[in-house]
Image 1 (cartoon, one colour):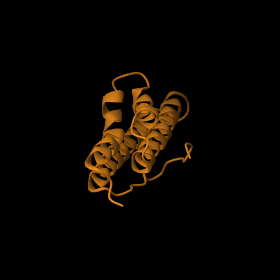
Image 2 (image 1 turned 60 degrees about the horizontal axis):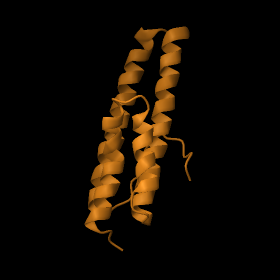
Image 3 (image 1 turned 30 degrees about the vertical axis):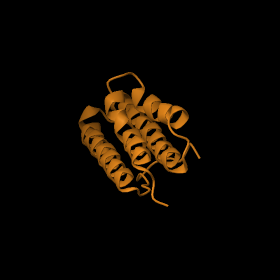
Length: 117
């Protein structure tokens, strides 16, 4: 069944809202969570909101790990290229997820922990 245009819009926003959330302390996680709880309760929107939430939680944990590595073990010179690669992966998955939602397809982020079932 093809999702309605409003559902596709909500699903795309679930993927792109964390871009705004990065300017807040933990908004990249809170915005997909808000869409999960306050947005339309259709399976399509819920699936995209959960995927975005899982991705943002995972990428936040990866970034925190890189930050701790930079402070303690290997230094910023080694971690900097890894941080750039993580940033590219985050942006890639967010844009691809939003485009898939706009087409009415389901998208799965790469390299994430599936914490929210």
